[in-house]
Image 1 (spheres, one colour):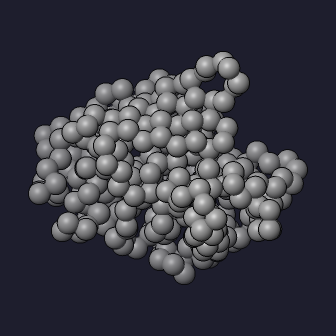
Image 2 (cartoon, rainbow, N blue to C red; image 1 turned 90 degrees about the vertical axis):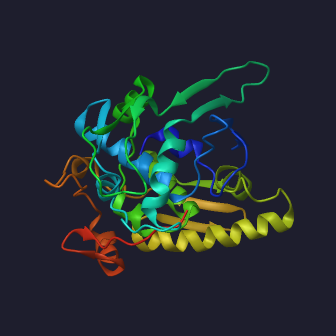
Length: 295
């Protein structure tokens, strides 16, 4: 996953308006989108961003073909092609449009100085699908051209992850936590304690800064941490009174395995221990049973 997207952490739920801002204690993160498009939220844009990151790294190209039908793109993501208001395919084009149209500004806290970095995932693209006819193939490929900055982020700083884990996890918070852990374990060299307040800044923008808000956040965090550790059992983390202690652990996907891709384009890399649990949760013969996702 692109490191910048891990840092940004998209909204978990629908946010009204075209502007979303949060602070993770180290920087202010602002997301801006056209008012008639709206901000991306939930699981689907996280899955799309992860797939885009992997495809850029795999193909070494800024131009990505998404497919001639919405169902084809959903298949690339491993999502259900069910219709209906709550079906994956009904929401996929909406969330893709929101994600590709969002600008992210990161402003680090540096005293009286002002420093910022703007990042857009895509400079240009066309989504030609008709959500009412998801299996109907258009004459041309829908495609996106990722920005040069995002391309360089993917090529130089992408963090190894397993896309199948994102398909299994249902909660946006659990997905964020998994991606964050893969990043931290990828670079961690010595034990570190992350205070609860820092974790709430990073993951709990929707929780009020009160004692009750922190209690609710910690409850949700512990629940999602259990889900993530089931799929990433080699991650050595210890919840403590003052925060979450991270101990150096093997990355969930090794750098050597990162380049392995099957002929169908799906990631062939998965940590051995986590792989058995993925099988229990829906993996058969290397393919994820495609079920509906939330968010």
